[in-house]
Length: 320
Image (cartoon, rainbow, N blue to C red; front, side, top):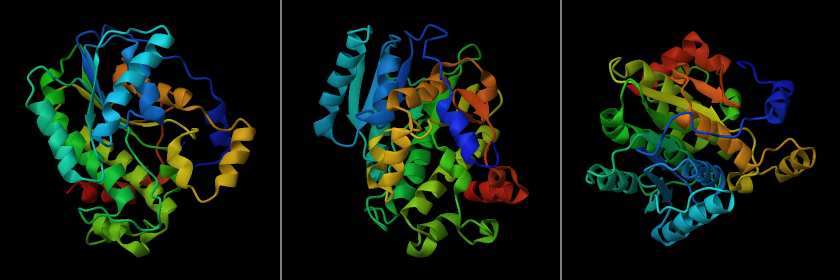
């Protein structure tokens, strides 16, 4: 999969994905899915609730959506044959704010009954404008898709490490995309004085270029993190590609006619189908997933850039 091609895209989109099912008992485990109120996060949450975990923590951008998100997940899980047990809580998380990320982590770390076993970092966006800055001074796509996602992952690592065991490793799952393979504007990036500050500049590219770059950064983050985690602490960290899905994230895409055409030609997955790879990474037993990129519920190869010497230098510099 190192070189992106349309034929390879077709094979991926048309591949039948297995329906999620637990391969081990998860009734003692706590899961967290960010961005659970819509799309991939919502569908993944429904699948996980049906597996009867001890607790599912679902996040939404603001408090007003939290209770409705919790109710909707439970209702949809029940309609499809799942449980109606009150095992879902919903917490606010605005990924465009570092303070919101820290507040969420504080609420979890301060509760002894909320030991976290699995984090599915799904929340993401495609910027509604060409250049939108957050209150923290970062371009919004870069902050939501990469900086806040990385911050959340690192701050919750202690909780994931404490709950992990050799028999049942904790999971860290970041939702990336196949578009990391077509990220541009990174030539010579290993020699930039600051990778993040360069990408943060308005002249780096349009909103699509920033979205593609943010998904590449996620892949590199997981590769570097997995290589740095202590070997004696079994945590499986990976990125997943849900495929091109009928999700609200594309509502700001400039070329809507492409999405409409692809949908008519059955080249777009439903968000339920796309969520299956997220759930596979969250509950599957294949430990070879660690540090890897998954597509269609299988370990796949990252882009040529990620695997190149320049890409290795880039990711190492990104980490420090």
